[in-house]
Every structure is written in C-alpha cells, then in structure tokens.
Image (tube, rainbow, N blue to C red):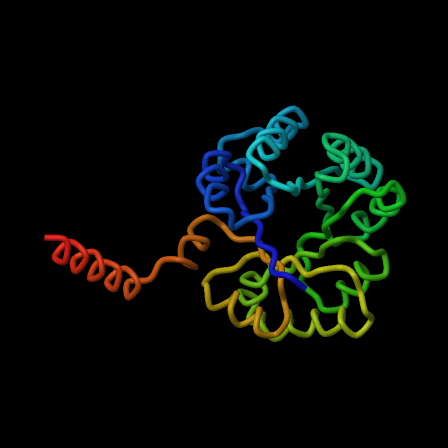
Amino acid sequence: MTLRLLLDSADPAAWADWRAIGLFQGVTTNPTLLQRAGRPCTLAELTALSHAAFDQGMAEIHLQAWGGDVEALARCAASLAAIAPGRVVVKLPMTRAGVAAARPLIDAGTPLTFTACYEVAQVLVAAALGVRYIAPYLGRIGDLGRDGHAELIAMQRALDGVAATTRLLVASLRHPSDITRLAAEGLSCFTLAPPLAAALIDSEASAAAVAQFEQDAHAGAL
C-alpha cells in the first residue's frame, strides 16, 4: 500500500503550514485536540473546521463522534458524516457501543475509523465490518509496559492474513524512528502531530551540509 500521512491537529493554521509542503492527505481531530486548540466540540465548529480543511485542499478530515449510549453515538456520527459525505471520516470508539453504532453508517457508505485500539484482536472486528481505518495508539500501548511496535506489527499481519481492506492508522507516535520501524514492516498509514512532522524532516547534519553548500556557493560567486 502507498504511504499515507495525516496531520493530527485541530489548528487550521498548522494545517496551512503543512499543506503548503504537500506531505499530508488529510487531518485527524478529536475532542482533546479541539480543547487544546481552544475550540468547542460542537457540530457547528466541526462543520466550520471541515470546510476550512477542504478549502486548504485536504482530501479527508477525521471527526470523532461522542455520545453516552449507542443511539446518541449513532446520531452524532450521522450528523458528522452529513457535513461532507465521503470526505468526513467518522471516528468511533473501539467499544461495543462504537461497534454497534457502526453498522448503519457502513450500510450508508460512510467511511469510518475505529479509534483507541489497544488489542490485536480488535483489528479483526474492524476487518469483519470493513471499516476504512482502525487507529492503534502506539505510544500509549508502550506506556502500559507492552511492546507497542511488536503488537502493531502483529495487527498488520492479522489484517494481511485475512486480506482485509481495513488499514491501520497508527496514532500516538512519539519519534520518527517509530514510523521508520513500522514502515519497514509494511505499515503505511500514520497520523502525526506537527512537532513530529517537523522531526521527520529536520536534521542537524543536513542543516550543516546545506550551510556549507550555501557558503561555498557565495564564495564561488565572488
């Protein structure tokens, strides 16, 4: 599968900075990111954010549904999907309520992401339902004292083993080496916070080499 990178941010200014580079195909958000960006978690706000993302050329935006029970979760998810059918990817929690809310959305052709994945077996649920993505939390799995890299590789092998169309959308990345290690094992879809995106590009050695090139170029032009 081709590499797919999404920007994990609810800040349109950050989207604009990175969209100019052309590295990201879309953005992912959640209520926590909205809070950090000083934005309310409301349908009106998410509608405005979605239009801002599309105006900037993003192909998709992931919006997380919320609700205290299956019915409320399903209503919220349907409202989010209606903002831009086919371009809003609705995020549902990897819980029994989230799975129950998924079926009518799938039948309506709504692209979905199951979020907060922590177990290898959960990816088979996503595969059986045929959702577009399931998002395992690499760093948080490691915080539990488990080998997050090994577990995500096992998730990918499970999806490959059943020829699933569902893709792992790796979240909670902490270091560029997380991406390179997992990419080498066939994982190809990642959501990155802006600081980690910068760390993919920035290198002191590269900067020093370029500074030398510039110095030599100016010297040669005299």
